[in-house]
Figure 1 (cartoon, rainbow, N blue to C red):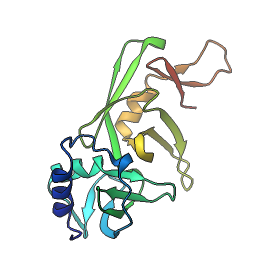
Figure 2 (cartoon, helix red, strand yellow; figure 1 turned 90 degrees about the vertical axis):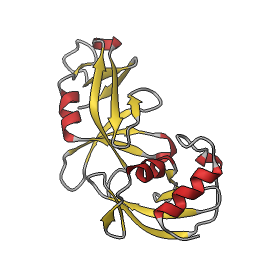
Figure 3 (cartoon, rainbow, N blue to C red; figure 1 turned 45 degrees about the horizontal axis):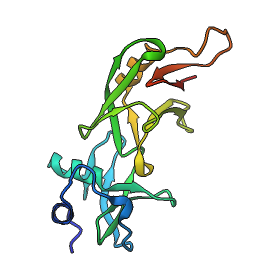
Length: 185
C-alpha cells in the first residue's frame, strides 16, 4: 500500500464499520515506516510540506492516532502502522463551555477535529509549562497517550473560572469540573 493519506483513509473505511472510534487498542501491526505527516504547533496536519486539504481525512486520522511507550506517534490500521511527527500536541482544544458553579461546575471543550470533551476523570486537565519558555501548557489527557492543548483563548476563559480549592489562604487554585478539582497554580 502507498503512504498517501487517501489510501490510509480508504483502508480504515473498509476495515471498520465505526469510523468515529475504531478499536485501535486491538490493532498491533508491525511498523510500516515513516510517513511525511507533521502535526504542527498550530494544529495543522501537513503532508509533504502542504496542509492536508480534506478535513474529513484529518478527522479520520485523529481517530487512528496513538502515542506509544517510545514517545512516538503512529497512525494505526488493522494491518499497517506509520510513524508521524507531532510538534506539540496532536489536537487543540477551544470553545470552553462552563455549566454550573463551584464544585457543581462542568467544563467541556471542542477540539479542532470537532470532538466535544468533558473535562473529567476520563479527560483530566493538567497545566504544566514549556521548559524553554516557562509558559503555561494546559492540556487535556486523552485515550491512547494523546493530549489536546487548550488554545490561548480557551486558557484565558479557564483562568476566569479559577478559584481556591477551599477557603484556606494556602490552598491551591484551580477549577472544578464534573466533581474533580484541577490545580492550575
